[in-house]
Length: 573
Image (cartoon, rainbow, N blue to C red; front, side, top):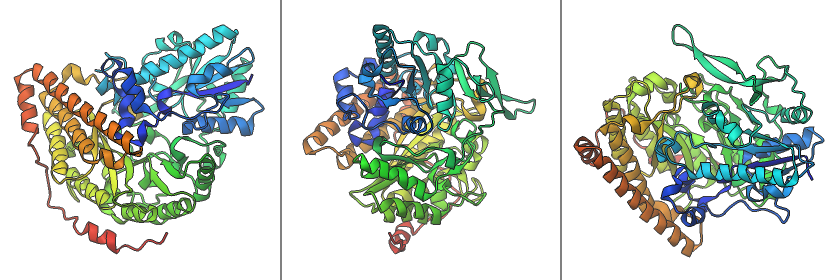
């Protein structure tokens, strides 16, 4: 038996027919999506070998595996979550579990599960995995410690009682892929080196002027573990982060860490910016290629900040193009995980150049996730002023103008953005909601291709210490209801317009998948409208108004000739 068994939240291993809209499916309540439909739409699952090892795994768990393989003598295996029990026995010392949304408290999941009142599929699958682990430990007499980490660890700070209920020994916070070997070795020996690690977690508090600052909360019970802020092991430099040794799901390869935009609700922006040079990215691309993955999905929180040198965040196009050219020598496709809007509105050549390098076209779109957040100038200036860089809201244009023109650039270059917006921000009014409704409807009226998904505010980043989870439905205004409706109406539009075109299955399965999507979108939108109508006449009137509300605030900013610029650009591959 191996000493360290690594596995992951099963929802992170689903491929969802390679259809972008379906990646949100685990957020949905178990009660409303029958298991046969859920498991069909989740296919294909991560492949595994005869022993039960995952042949592909989430990038985060591959980083942990790489550190252990390269820096420790501990034997390690990455097990498929359905088959994890095969590897658990008396010799097992550590069972590490990676998760993104273990308790269903993520900002999108809260919108689907009625602010936690319903159990989501992501929670059910995580609980089933932890139950499977506990049964295997009991059956084999294993005394292995269960250690959970990943971007979803913060949810246990809100519900610490779930740590014991799920049989978890420790929840680990923060980047650990350079020193996880030290942590596991010390946990095995029950001798945590407090000069490196501490029992506790990072949070924020506010001074008398309302300015946030980081502090660390000790946990005498030893449930939470984080890097000691005074440790000699600072956050790792790029050269200290190990290259993955086995392939990651969807060809994931990290190109940078951090974002730099400083939205007050976001955790990602608290990480300092660090960049992988192209040759280090290519190393991981080649690992994935050996696993049969002929594409690269760049792990990044803000692609346009890659190698950025300008304090106003003008994109470093030369560095970005150099990265894509280096990677495209080895694979047939590459795209980023996350990006932003304003750099593209300011400098269309950035998106257009990437599109030309990767060979984007009518039958080869580039998908990307983007935080749109709001259509309101006021909320942008209050909570995320840097999101408009290198432009300035109110000087170079309204936020709506910047968004619309960036969207035009993206579509002209065959990008399809998947936007998210946030409900429940501090100071939000009905006018802000209508600004967002108008923006979404206006872009849809131009037949631009995009999705937009509403999310509840979850205070992370500089707001982390407030421990606030927004219960949108408890104080839902008619304007917010109308905004939610408009978001899902646009999803229905996209499902009907492009679902069949961008699905990756064979012809018959594409028909089946898109049929389920279209029926599901119609069903969900109908239920949503009826639910809001039951809340009162003012909700019904708001939704009726929203159906035809296409107003956006403008300053007359001109961003024309985008498609001509795209055709004229010369980018050699």
